[in-house]
Length: 253
Image 1: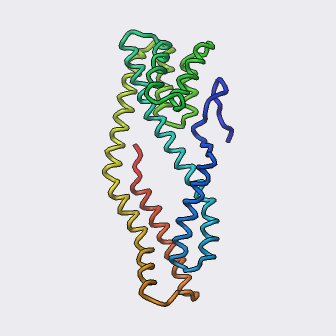
Image 2: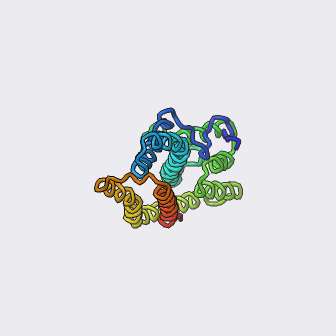
């Protein structure tokens, strides 16, 4: 995959997340702690638990990176909604498109700070306008780098409307309403399925608690071949059931 740097060569590609050392360490330790604890509960072997945790930590880094990437894209979409709101207000005040983006930069800078993704993107758009780039090209580039369907769709509609002399105020207003409504619906759905996710996490943790209780009331360590094989099969089934449960509670609009 070739990372995209934008028309001006100084933009971020939101398909890729560059982890900081602290992020890498956090992701690794999370995997080590979870797998080592689970392995010790089931197999009661410190060396095996350390080895299993150390190996799993490298895989958990990838999962943690994916989680951080989704959070960044989600944050960008929320910030993009506020960008559309600011531009919509500028159009209502009679400003043209370049002035609307200049005003949006000041609004978003006060709201999110200079280091936020959306402020950086609006700064790139304003710099592109000053360097005689077409606004629709800059927005299309943002949509391409964002990896977000809503931003891509808005950029496509904006391009067509701007080139054909359409009503940009209406395009921005309707896009803002659509993204706002979509986010509100997602929040409602997440609230509804939150209890289901909590139940899923509890059910996934129950087998480990049961084994822990059995060990507390029994002197047997269960280290023969049949016991180990049964435990391995049980862990695999727990993992498969948990993944299926995650897919069932994941609703995409």
